Image (cartoon, rainbow, N blue to C red; front, side):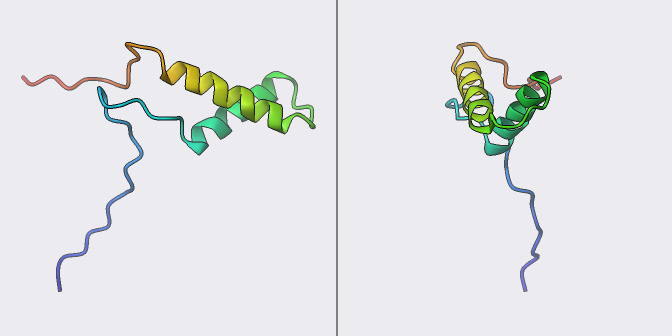
Length: 74
């Protein structure tokens, strides 16, 4: 039987690769932050979600965006 090693799903974005849309989790987190910023009042879930999605899409489409630290060979 081959050695079956479980590997975590790849969720990190490759730097320099084609830009990708924000993940569901990223949008949910930003929508929650927006909800807290406006005092936690209920009733604006869709507005919070669409604002979060718009902000993250705009952020991900900016040229020269830093994807993370770069590794430098010694």
